[in-house]
Image (cartoon, rainbow, N blue to C red; front, side, top):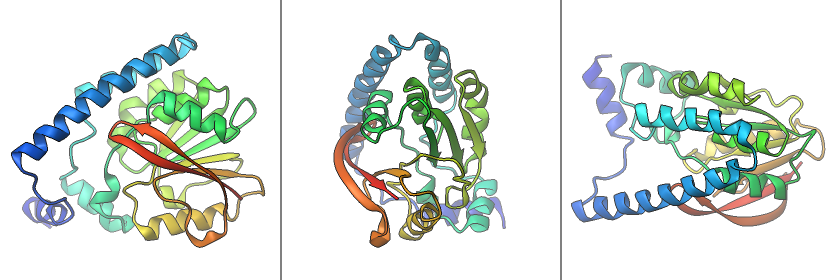
Amino acid sequence: MTEDASKALIERELPDRLTLFERAVISITKLVLAILCRALDLLMLAVRPRLVGPYLSVWLAERRRSPYRWPRSFETVLLLKQTGHTARELTYGEIPLLTAVLLFRRAGLGPGGRLVDLGAGRGRALLAARWLGAQARGVELRREHVEAVRPAMARAGAHLEVADATEADLTGATHVFANWCAFGEESRRRIAERLLACPSGTRLISVLHPAPGGQLRALCRRPGLFTWGFEWVWIHER
């Protein structure tokens, strides 16, 4: 497959073109939300200064190479073909530290807990788990995200690895986080099936979509602030 063909394949997955006004509104909204989220994150980090360095490293990595650009490389096309995912499922979206801490605490995560983040991006949710004193491990399909922040995660006591969220090892997890807003129905179903093999009491925190199939008990639904706006977040229990 040529480079032009690979770009054309991904273009078919991209959303419709936006008008200039729509782009301007989105850009302004993103800027306001980014400033708000960063300010809240820094307030949270004042309580856990040991996490300031790793957090700033993640932030700097995002400034050097934006994770929000759509992947258009030949390697990305091969990755999509090998895993069966769509380009939309590689959409990047981060959860602010404050939002993650509040949601994880509501789900009962704390010292002695073990969080696995499926589709972890550059690992900000892992820092929230460490803020709460829990162990944290994340899996992310895009290698460039992982390599950009792996040392920072290690300094925070978290582990981030390259892996497919639908095939991730959930052994030992007490809590599983799935920021699966862009995940397709099939990917969400495969993840939910893997959760059925977890011990009773394992909890799933999922963004926008509840767990499919009805086999995980829904405990509650809470709104959460994200870098793109507010979304509903579900907490389930195995």
